[in-house]
Image 1 (tube, rainbow, N blue to C red):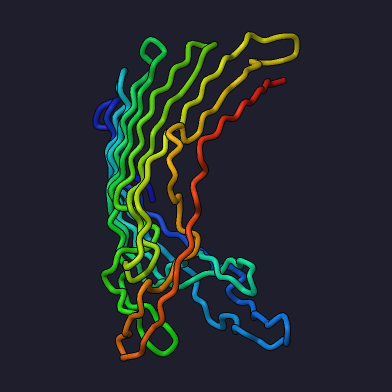
Image 2: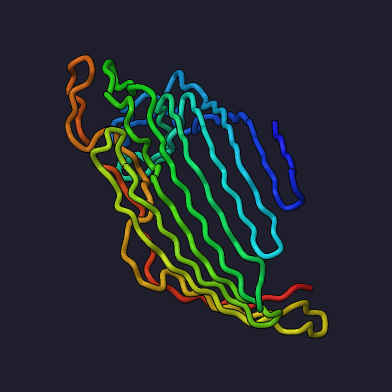
Length: 274
């Protein structure tokens, strides 16, 4: 359900309520076998409930002659939150799904941009996110004490800033993006540091030639600061340190895996329409 209300031509209030469904990864149901003996090492999941979510958004949009902007407050509630991760079986990575139970995600998004002025147009956006785990996670016959912990892969702050230029022939864009710290374990004892990346794109658009429509050339500079950082959590873990469960069982620690961000790179492209 979506409601929009223009109390003036350039001012709009809006509200959205949506539901969503997500099936678990099919690989979570597979049995895993020892390649040397053929014995079953891990049984596939017998009962893995699908994820269901309800989201509510409330916000304001501004459509001015010079400025565009929006502020959106959101609240997402998840049941049987499906966390996609990787596990290793005999040295090979296999994608699977972890049921993290309930999750509540709340926050605000802010976006502001300016319409082209002398061919220049700036842009800025930011998001604050507070995502928490609503219950303890079942591990074998015990419960990992995760209620109230911050959800994995959920940076509290993200922000972007950009500046573009386009006079019909010469065009370009410079952007910088910040991603805050995010946890890689459900117990919040392992975290990936925040990082900043910057990109630059420069190009030239020619007039139509023969059957070629808007032929152009472009040079993209990615990670112009050559920032060496982790760019994401590949495999989440239950806990980075041995943890005592609610029922007194010792739950062994394990190490998460991360994606390594690419270094500085230059890419040249040429294209045209027909």
